[in-house]
Length: 436
Image (cartoon, rainbow, N blue to C red; front, side, top):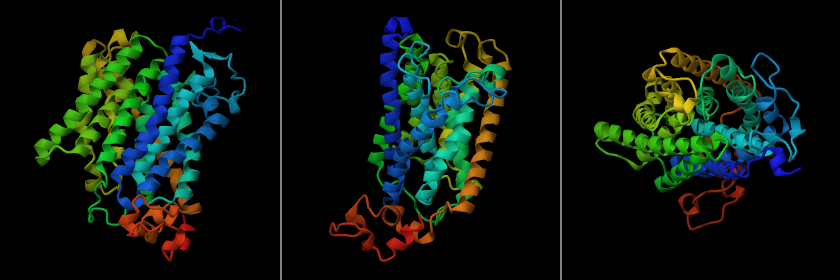
């Protein structure tokens, strides 16, 4: 069968292949971003939590996740079926729109991977790696997959019944990861020394490199969601760039006014906040709307990251402050700034659409946030009771790199004289490693 007969557009396919690679690159970028933000004793553990998510989520997605998320609806817009479990029936001749279904499934897989990895930032420095290996696939099936079906799957209730808009993942990616991160932070409790010890990023150049890779990959994330090489992809691409810039500037403005110092960490965080917020709205708002969305996220998220000190939850790397708050901002502002030439119909409050679309967006945010938080909290509690989710005090004090992985990122900073690292380098390494 020829490509033309299959309905495959080679230009759309080429763009989506590139976009898929860009989104996959975001997870190593996230690993560097998070790795630079933690202290030296847990850098490798932070990198591992992201990298292992690639493997775990891929297996789950191919086995059942894709079918449940994008298969035909089987129950009131809540979940798909298992017709394509194990990717059954999805050969090279299968088409989704104008691209091969296998490519579409792989593109969506990269979204699932980074969403799971994002959660790790909320529990950095104190989670058992073994528990994380169990949590990720369970969470992907019970939280990410159903929400994705609601938002993008055929017959999903948020898409078909509610009519809320989400172009590239404010609901299934940003709000879900942020709410889940908050739930796990509450399950595990704060790090040793929270609010007392300085827990500064150990490597700001690594943070900036990670943010740059995230920004680069985000063009595949957002513009790729057009699923074609077309004008909508171009508009989403430009909106993504614009919002990242105003998010960066908004965060720096707040830092300068509040603290008297615009920081490197603030610049990286502000860019990410703007990119988070434009994710759901990049295919719905004009360029002016994108600039405002990014600016609003940069300003609001810069304040939101301090909530953990006031409210007492230890969201280590600000997953709540950036991804949950940024996702809520971007998803709700669709109801304010959506324009017909982008959406093909629905309009926001400022463009004659009234309050209707804003109301739909609010319902979607509340439903997804509540579901993700409650289910994740339940998963976390069950795992904590069954196998323990929190690392021991000795592991946390010594550092997860050495006690769990028998490695250090910087040998001279831990053992001195460039000595090789082994489990026997620390007398209690075998004992604490067995608790991981």
